[in-house]
Image (tube, rainbow, N blue to C red):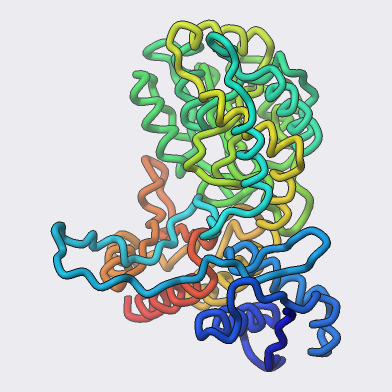
Length: 455
């Protein structure tokens, strides 16, 4: 049964048209006007009825699909899912105190939106795994051969890295790959240059391996290559979207960095954590495509699918991959066969590409809204890519105090000072817009702006 609803469009409202439609659909499900199994009109028919472009209705359906409210059935149409939010059951006793953080809205960066119901591509991958028998004996310490080949094809196609399966090692994610690399290729006391401000887990990993950390300043274009010293044995860099300020390393600086590494013999560690999500131009080619002998490339599924998968990849010279695999053969520390087999199915069937395309549409809208809301309160930077923006505040602001006040009001946000070590700079907030639902994002931003107004 196809359902029709009295939907309205307000072209003068601040909320984009497709988000207006999405909100009305959600309300109709929650109040029972739309029920599980109801067939929705096609995007073409709905666009005609509302006198809007089809891109508006398609974006609304994409949003609802990403959040798990609707699902497409091949050859049949689009339907309301059978997973509808329910009121919690009344409990007579509460044996444990409630977690106070459970009610907080989060604007922490780096976590994608996870729909409440799995989509067809995800289910299909796991159904395929369930029909296979696990391999006999221990699997390859570098990763399933078929997965390594698929990953080599993937990074060649989307990141411009010319490589083969012999250059790929499957990891448990970026930090795991980084720690493995430091364990095998670095010695205690080696100097490693890390961006400042920069990724805290990279700093912790270097400290745990007893490396001497050299703080390197960044600007609006990313790492300042001219600040590197020749005694650094390695450089950790986020060239496609500097974390957390958002600069992208331009071609001239990339070439300068490669020339410096060739001259000094240093290893370049490229963290490619969210390069898939660019909103101004196509994703930039990876640094590793310039010199795979000098660059080790770290990729991950944590921003495209989920950080809970603990899956990623490392691309490097064949010699480096062989050394890492030999070490892992003794440590037994690599992803299990079911996860790797599922990842292979997702790559082969185009599920990862589909998730990236869907994410770009969803996050681009959220990014635009977040920037519009927060621009009056400071300078927004890093908005062209990724899952977060950085709001630079006036010099007299205390970002730690503001973050604490926001948490007290119900919103978790990261102060920029958390990411600084020795290089000074303005205070700010690093704000992720990917994690919450669209309605929760609007609520969180409203609360945050109230805190910023009172600061």
